[in-house]
Length: 356
Image 1 (cartoon, rainbow, N blue to C red):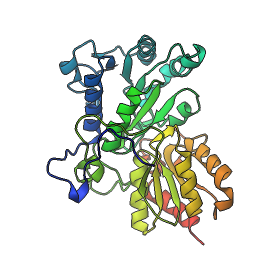
Image 2 (image 1 turned 90 degrees about the horizontal axis):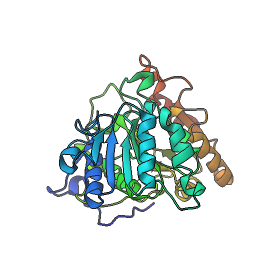
Image 3 (image 1 turned 180 degrees about the vertical axis):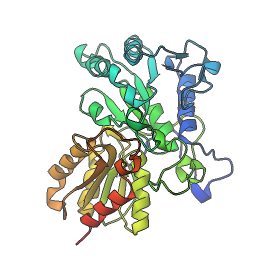
């Protein structure tokens, strides 16, 4: 569960020096793109409003001004065209980083991603590859309704030949994104938009928090990497293991703290490749497992996690695995917090899991 970096991680939290930079996730992603483009002239960034305007969430702000219109540019409103162009660029030696404005709009490019990008290395016997990183904000919690709140990560984890990465902190967002851009395989990089500006604890009726006081908002200047396929141990405890990623890392942590439960919370970071060794080690230690994600329940990635834990840790389990997820419905606008797997449902699952 260790991180591979090219420079030491700076001190954080109360011990941080005044020189440490505290960034939100948007700023960290922008910083990662800037570093990657500065190191490699083959890195290009593009998408709807991603050039001159800097993206609807401002993740690409300032890049066109700094690197020019040939390396940071706007595209027509055509997701299949954006992905198709990126695949061609990748096959000819560039490292494209296309932005899909919302994950809900990625479906027109799905055939290109799965049938072409994910398969090209295999189909060409290694002669060609597609070092493409598709960035896209995903998830709910912002009252975006059914067309701006979806979590389609499991659709991509099902297809071989492509990696799926989801950061939960500014520090990881920068380090993981740099690793993705430098990877020679195509990567889907989903950004949890509910935590762009601050960690969210799931208590929607409480004041909004920002990243500035969070230890993982300390983001080093310059180049560093967070290794793909390595989970992060957020908290450590003996009572159970929580497997989660993205926004739900913060929600699960807040609920456990409220209930006074000591648990291993594993932020998976990357769904493919998956750190199955860290999962297995933790579940065998605690004997109980809860899986939390915002995506719909049926065929969600939690189902795969549940199967893997059952296969590898069956004789160590002291209770059935619990899953807390979104419902098998479109994401509702008026019932946002009923759909969102928040403190009430996570708390009920914890009570069931620990009742004996």
